[in-house]
Amino acid sequence: MDKVCIQGGTSLNGEVVVSGAKNACMAMMAASLLTDEVCILRNVPQLRDVDFFIQLLQTLGVEIEALEPHTWKLQAKQVVYEAPYDLVRKMRASVCVMGALIGRLRRASLPLPGGCIIGNRPIDLHLKGFQKLGCSVSMEAGIVQISADHLQGNSVFLGGRFGSTVTGTANLLMAAVCAPGTTTIESAACEPEIVDLCQLLQQMGADIEGIGSPTLKIVGKKSLHGFDYTVVGDRIEAGTFLLAGLVTQGNVKVVGCPPQFLSALLHVLESIHAEISYHPSVPSIEVFPCLERLIPFEITTLPFPGFPTDLQAQMCVLGICIPGISLITERIYPQRFMHLAELQRLGAHILLEDSTAILQGGSALSGSEVMASDLRASAALYLAGLAAEGTTVIHRVYHVDRGYEAFDQKLRNVGAKIQRVEDH
Ligand code: EPZ
Image 1 (cartoon, rainbow, N blue to C red):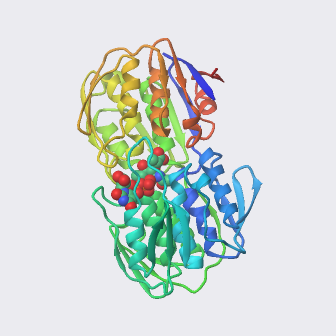
Image 2 (image 1 turned 90 degrees about the vertical axis):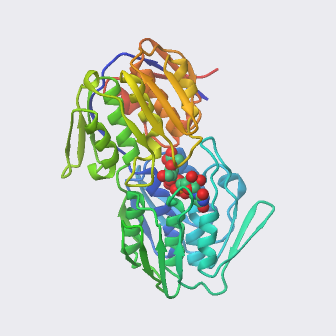
Image 3 (image 1 turned 120 degrees about the vertical axis):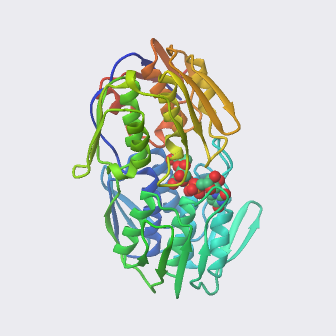
């Protein structure tokens, strides 16, 4: 297990090229289950979660090989419908194979994904959606058994009490593209990762209308072709680096993420007087030193195009660097505040009222030993360590390897003083 030592107080300056989107590439790899033809996926990030997902697909029968570091060839000639517990338990995104298995085999058998530190991770909306398409769903000893004698298109409302579901939308799409008849998905997720998946499925021959809107209309096809597709840039990685630039009073340019994927973040930053420029054609987004003139903010996390929950922890760090009271309300995962206690160890003054963090910003942060707890909380601790005076040691940094490719090196490339060492 490793730890990271960060020497804070240095401004970050330079250019970062984001990797492919973690939360797009796994559903896209799962789409290879829908055809026996060759599929090529490019700009796949090198992440632990992707490694686990590849292992899972291989146990399902998908032949997978790396053509080059970020390009994978996948072919599902023969597919089995049962996924092993020891792989599914490691990662929530494993549920993304359900829809594709139903689309291909009309059958799926998967252990119920565990919860995680950010909160409960149910899949009730996924299962209700499958039932609307004619599947029978049962649970035996923690294993979800799904089968459909006659898969049939239908109208499905996918919204829950927290809004839309990203992987739920991905699952229903992949079941519906091969379901006879027409399926309408209401309250579908509109995240850019879902748009990217829809475009990949269209390349396979799927008939999908309403892409990017909360209402998707799918006319099922008997079979689909392979694909050769490039994963979109990771907007959460992009937002993380932009916030790293702001909290260190640096000048950071992020390349590879269309600005419109971060419209909620950019809107907030501009409203608090941050100095930003962006070029949709490249695409690139750039922040400049401006911390001393920023004003406090109030945000709520919401489904896209609202403020993304995956940038909530990182935004807390900006809030504690701005004099005054900033408020962040978490509406997607109300318990997603494990990072607050660790930020307090660095000297942050924070109160938590229900699912609202009250950030009293402006007091200097000073380095300390802290513990990473989940992917985005880990990234927030890196940002806080970079902004703090002195040395910050972050334990259990393996969490960050799940979702950020070469995070330490990309930060070092823009001037961060970071060392990763064995944690005895
Ligand atoms: C995806 O998770 C992302 N993961 C998450 O990113 C992200 O935080 C989340 O979407 C929200 O944007 C992947 O895409 C692999 P949801 P997902 O289903 O699909 C509730 C990261 O850090 N819900 O959109 O699992 C659920 O509890 C990760 O990269 C139900 O109630 O999230 C949550 O409160 C963390 N029933 C809300 O909906 C369901 O059947 C949104 O969940 C499904 C979800």
